[in-house]
Length: 454
Image: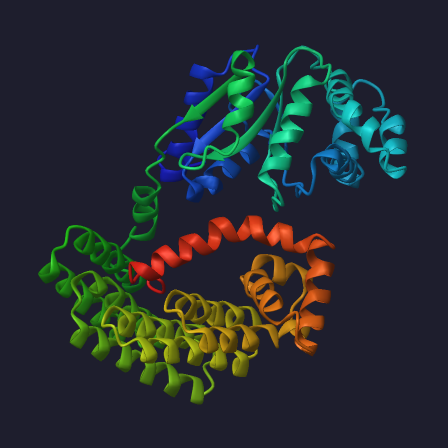
């Protein structure tokens, strides 16, 4: 491993923060970082769970999705058993373990879906694993990064239940939390004598910049990335001449490489940076040039530029919005949705129609809002349950059903069925909770004229 690699340097810093702050009596540990730093948390956990870990702890790390408090221990045990059952893992454990690892009781509880027993058996399995590996006195860390998080409140409840379970000393639970969100604050405050919060500025923008621009003097793609970073710096410093200098360099670099995707990226990035300066003439010149380039390439068979073209449409809409050309802005957002449907990009279409929906809601344009929702919801049969949960579909579904439920509307029936499948019979309550945070944020962005360029 390259010790001078910017990522390695930051992982080493995280290890040092851990060593300086985590004590054996701590049963609950969290890394409190920026949301975008979750990859570094993941890298830290994966390294420590590997033979190359730098801490003396026994680390196990799971991505097990979280659904609800009373089933999560069962899900974790099932995940662990599945990993143990992999032939290579069994072989490795057989070499390092002291005799066989008996998981028959745990396996029985998992198979029988005995959720209450699984809550008790999770710490028991951890201790059994420590005994089996001959490291019964080594601090054990159960690191978690759920791939899906259905309810933070339910996860808080599960952590509280975990803290109340009888456990052998030296068993620690590790979770990831957001600096601004402090999602797990209540349980960390309740058990503050047994909990520790780790914080560290990982300076990830610097790390990304170092990696991305390495070799910029000789590699045109590295130089292009340097242009992107320098444009961002100039925009942050509100230095328009410097932004123009690096924007023109990015465009020239894109032209020289002959890579049309790179050139299209240069136009749209440069235009996006100019939003801060409200140079609408130059913004429109760049966006219109980029749209022509994308359309020409798509016509010539370069389908990779289809998502970029949709992005251009939303930027055009955002620029119209800032200039108070409101109907034109809505037209561009709807055009992005229609084009996404034509391309077969269903989730992108839903997202584009949602942008139009939020904008229409903000302007109190009732008919336009219903039309945007209707176009999105007519894509219901093309969306999987997972795609619905990961998209803005639920917000439009909730609103449309509320508006049209007294009418004989076949779309209401279809949408309701889809939402019950995705969220259960109590789907409206779930969406209300999601809506309070998400839609409020989007409306604030619309108000600030930032809806599409952020």
